[in-house]
View 1: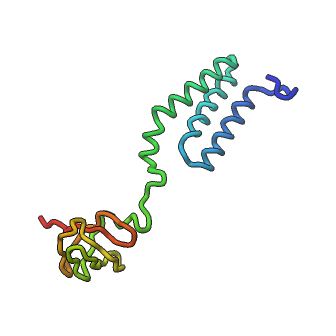
View 2 (view 1 turned 45 degrees about the horizontal axis):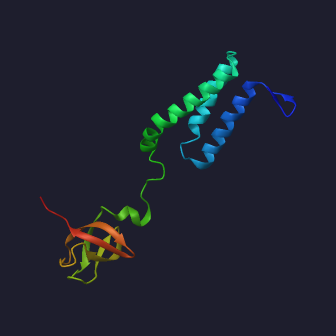
View 3 (view 1 turned 90 degrees about the vertical axis):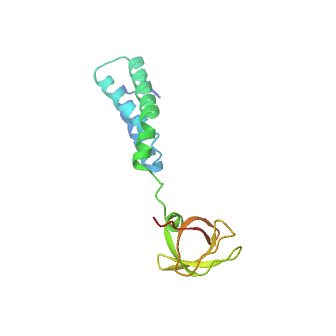
Length: 152
């Protein structure tokens, strides 16, 4: 193969494609181009075995697309890239203790993780007494939305 008047082996082309895809994947961590790097490696092996360029391209496309379609979702779920709750989002689902009563349609306070937060009931007509255990259901602005913890 000749590129810009320079004779280039398909082995070098597939190696370059694989490296470029790996670099893009490392920069984006989107689990998209990694599959094309794998396809390029399969095409590289085909080039080493002296298969035709048409077969190499077909293998590259087939392997890349199959891996992308059939395995990407599995790996995204397993790795859970970027889905770890941090900061305030980590409070949702946690339990808190009421430190200032929450009356119907009024703001009270709860303590969670050593910090005191403003809180309202998910059901605005509900009352929560001091020392009552509540569950954090959501966060709206700087207020926690809470419900009572059910005791078994």
